[in-house]
Image 1 (tube, rainbow, N blue to C red):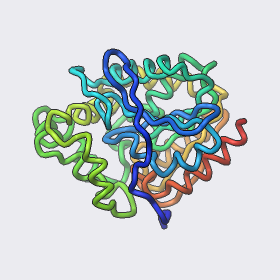
Image 2: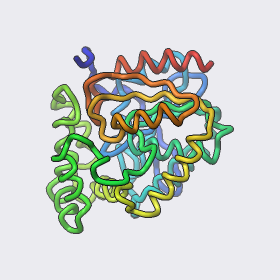
Image 3: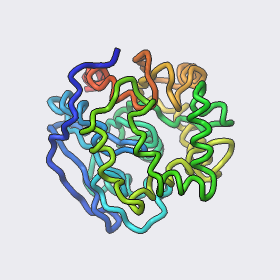
Image 4: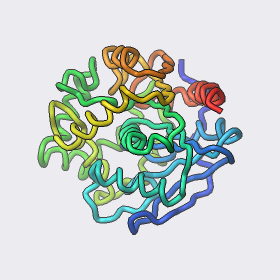
Length: 298
């Protein structure tokens, strides 16, 4: 059963910083060591609204909106993974963040791991939900047991078809809350998630995201990037907390077993039943475990 008392409100003061010529939106709550929250796609810092209040009494919690997402600006760029990395790294540098604890979902894990690989001395620990720890060798590894999702993403990656579905028909964002979670989203929640992507032009960042997923050897540059930080991941002794569910899109039972066999300082937490959006089902449970784990790091 999912958590109760899940708020749909976003009760935070907005802050902005200019990175690479574009305004990046973020929220900054609490004091102390930095916990940096990185969302995936199609999402924004709204994802963390029920998590941050639990942790901000013990740490400085910062959640940015990736460039082109949430309330950040949408510059005229390709929104490739390389672009996002430049903006995330630039954000960290601009705010002079030190001794970072990353909390990341989905694509956010790629930006956290890529940074940590090159700046391990500035990272204290990492916690992940639906991380991209390794490429998917075949389509069978992606969303195992959910063939309809796989077929949808194959369409998303088909030239012209994917553009029409995501940009013109808005099927990616409009379906948030339909199948990737246990509970039904409220209309207020749906409105918040749709807010950054109301116009066709605003959907370029979320169209690009499925094109970048490392599946069956493509795209080569993303596969290489993830394989590179995967090698580092197997060597590092940084503390890692991994949440998982029974129907994860990115962390299957096989990948979970790989993590247990290969990661040196790993803590796992089984949330039970769930899928890609399980942060929206278990925000308080996740927060409690995050806080317990974080206090052991201090």
